[in-house]
Structures are given as C-alpha cells and as structure tokens.
Length: 222
Image 1 (spheres, rainbow, N blue to C red):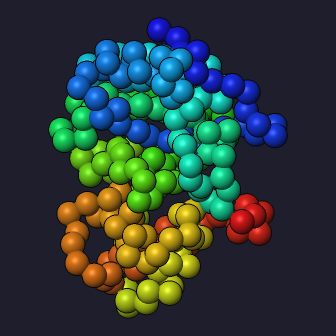
Image 2: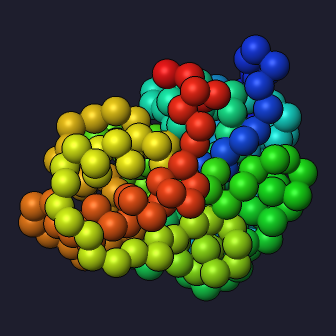
C-alpha cells in the first residue's frame, strides 16, 4: 500500500529526527487503511505490524503527515524534519518481539541514509506533550538504546531544583511547558512507573541527558 497523503519537505529541510508512534487502532489493517485514506489527511513513512511486516507508505524524501503540532530542539514543522514510524499497537499491550526486531532494522536503515543520531529518535509524546502519549509506557526505549538506536539516561539522584530541571529539559530538546507537564512527559518515556512530585531522579535524568545530548540552543533557534 502507498499513501497519497504527503508533500514536499519545506524550506529545503531534510530528516534529522525519527518519530515513533503507535496506531491506537484495533488492527494493523485498519491503521493502513486510515494512513492511506485521502479524507483522513494523515500518513507515516512506515507502518510496522505486530508480526514484523513493514509497509513503506511514503518515500523518505517526502513530507508525511504524522507529527502534527509540536516542536523538538526549539524548532517546529517536525513533519519536514522527520521520518514517521507507526507501530500497530493499541497502547494497552506490550510490543511484540518481532515488531521490535523489524523496527530496529528500519531504524538502522534510516539512520544510515540520513544524519539522524540516536538522540534524534524520539517519541511522539516528546514533541507534542499534553497532546500525544505514544508510543506509551510499554515501549522499550532501553532496548533501542542498547543497539545505539536511541538514548537512555545514566542517572543518579540529584538535588531537586525545578528551574534547573526545566532548563535541562529544554536543552535536551523538549518544548517549553509547565514543569508538572514536563515531569509527566519525561516520565512517560524514561520512568513510566514513577509517581508523585518532581524528585531527585527526575532531575538527575534531565541533567545527564542535557549534558550528553543537549542541542545547541543558539544554532537551533527558538
């Protein structure tokens, strides 16, 4: 299947991010139909089924319509700067091993063709906090990080400093938002089991990610 829902990337932009989604639909076939429906005005470059079957729906050099409103690294129009990968999953079940195997193959190929670094592989929830939660708490980011296909913090407990936490999160790439929403968004990816107010582990995670993978704010722009 091929989706008609795409356009040219704007302003000469090329992929520097890969955005991971879940479909939140009852089946991969239903998701494929939606992603290829002109009336839906939504698409992705790839759709990966629970069994590991990979469907290339939009050419990588084209702008698929998967990210929507949001930003990463201080810049918007994420669709023009990214490749979108949809995983067939309702959001309530674990991701199948075959599906994760296929995702790793797809990511390695994408990262070999485009200048996308591990820190550029992000969740939909990362760039659209409060609006999106996919790929959700069941997605295994540590597995991708072990393969050099994403990042994972090397955290320790730090002093709780809300202002520093927010500044570090912005340096890592998160959009500007209220501290509580930022805490919840970060935890969705890195500490999905955590509850309660901002703590020292939250602060340590953000400090580590900012120090190792922080964007150049001057170069990125606001």
